[in-house]
Amino acid sequence: MSASKTKILQKLTVNTSDVTSLDFYGSSLLVTGSSDKTVRVWRWNPGHGFQEASYSPLLGHRYGVTSVRVSPKGGVLASASVDGTVILWDLNNGEISHTIMQEFGESIRACIFSPNGASIVSSDDNGSVCIWGQDRSLKCHLKVHDEAVHTIAFSSDSNIFLTACTLGNVRLFAVGNDFEKALSSADCSIDAAHDMGVLSADFCKIVHTDPADKRSLIYTLATCGTDHFVKIWRVFFMSGNIDEQQPRGGTRLIPNTPQEHFAGQSSIYSTGVMNASCAQTISAHGSSVTCVRFNPTGTLLFSGSLDKTIKIWNQQGTCLKTLTHHSRYVNCLAVNGNSSVVASGSNDRTVAIWDLTGNLSLDSHISDARSLLFSMAVKAVDLPLDFTCPITHELMRDPVYAEDGFTYERAAIQEWFARDHPTVSPMTNLELSTAELVENGKLKQRIEEYLRTLDPQQHPV
Image (cartoon, rainbow, N blue to C red; front, side, top):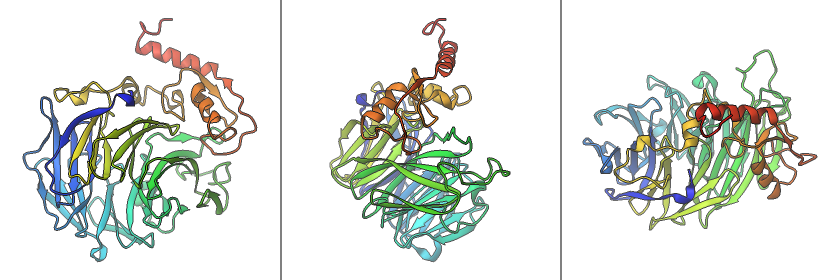
């Protein structure tokens, strides 16, 4: 996939007010929410592009829609509104299956399903979150911030739940077993993550394990805010489910006892369960950055801004392309399941559909459009994680060891060292005594053997 080939594919122009939220289910179903109180469902139809479902728009909210999410299991759509409700819709017929009321009737700013679809979380203007179980009963109501919570996110394995507020603070909670235990205090806090407010956050789906202890999990998190920055964080987590016989914490990434450390203007408060570190700060846009989203393979990051643009970044923090089409603020972004298209919603009342492959037309079968990298990445059982570079998340061709114990693509780690990180590990953010690299010959041989099984003609013995 070449981000430089990205082009506009379609424009949806039916809304009468700002488009505030987007979500994909799979590759060819798109849902949109708007300040005009509507929720709309779109399906890709070769020859026409995205067409609105016969039962759309979905009308049920009294005020503007702030968030739309499709259950990971499909079939159910959740929409949240400043009217204080989350409405659950049946995607088969567009009918309301359930209406959830936020505690104390607060305006809801975001809603999200847990990755297994069992729970729904909503956040509000009072700094609180409500967690709803599979039977849609309230499991927990907790005030987590002093200001409005516009941003909530889950890690792909459901281990970590994130909240962020308009003061710029981030809270991270260990939530194994789908909120079996009620939320209490955060397991890791980042104060002043963004000056004057966090507007969006997204976890990369790829999770690494620290080779030093084989237990600490390393997550990549992107956040953005009103300070015009996109920040890339590493979140370090010690799951109690990994080995109950071994104590948590006490590793090179996670301390035994609560500690405070700093990343620029940000203060990070860690515990024996979780820690975080800022890996990159990117001066991303000329105005507030409203949304960040990783693509499913973790190779690209997308950002949208009040400056009316969308930018595509690689994992080194290099801007690969700037997309300019909207005439007003870009509010929201979503990437479809096979990374072939990205959708953007704007205050200009439109949704733009962008072709990430450079090869699509309205006649294409979008579910068949995918890059070679994605085709391999979806075969998670066949493609070991250690075949991909932890920086780029792409298949390695020239793997090398670094002093931190990780194996990287040679060009990627050399680029990292050549920029602003001459002696810092890109994964642990710890100082290295040397930038020397050693070829990982055994891994290189395994990768070459794997590629030969995929295409013997392209990779002969």
